Length: 439
Image (cartoon, rainbow, N blue to C red; front, side, top):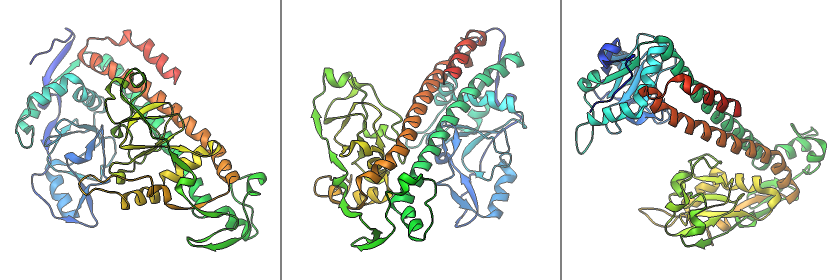
């Protein structure tokens, strides 16, 4: 497999480009309850290290592994077993983890060299080169020897190299910032929901003679000053015990594939992110084939298949999904945000999971099941007051998602052409600057 690059580019093997190419431990250290994370292939995802599910090892094992392959800032990590070719640029000053069965490209603290290497390795050309070197049938892998021989292409001009990296890094940073902003907006909405509808903070404050935090007098006046006992425990006076079906109803507009569905965004359950209340992805409508149901802007999409994956979001547009997703419409259109976060609560997802049917692939049921889940039901004016605060946050988050999508599409367009020398930087800087200004 060969590729043509501009005359002012050079190609060297990884063990020449890098100071050293190594891999993590091949041993199996004992896991402990408290210690240092051990990063394996499963922890390298979408350009970052995810330590949320990492096993922990003792300090002595951590130190022993690091004698062979200690990770430093501006190293590059690549998966070698199973899912081969996932790449991460190490940016922490003192990475807190050791590595096992993943590759390590060491760049001696050279940020530019490491950044270029990262973008090269995630480019389509390098991914083809990596996958052509894989071995194994039951479980695929790439050997350390093949990693060391992997070709790395780069411009001979350090200035050109630096400018290309700067463009791609700026796109990545802007996309990351938009996603972080969305996470913050979600956290704010969740915090207000918990304060009002789980902890009943405004009622407690008024009961104790204090003004509720963070709300005007008109909103505070909607809350009572007393509690009363109910079958679900102590609740604000004037609130009732209701059911989820009092807030949401199942739309269930079944439709056959055709011209109507082809013109709509298609959102199968795999396009709904886990534990993210915003819809981040969809497929072309012409991929929608069977067991289809329509949803409308403002509906709540609730993943009914394997509900424990917690796939719940609000629809920012009309579209089509499959019957593995409940399409729920808020009964009070002025309280959409309240309906969303009532469905989004972990307690709702847990209830759907506990009342699912099917052992191999559990499915939640709406009618006579999730529909009748008991909830503490606030009066409509309080639901609407919450929504008036939170819906602008949802709108801002959806705008951010659109901006991030535009930038991600630009990145996907530019990355392979910049990293192959097909597109020179001067040809794209105006387009790049317009994209950043537009977001």
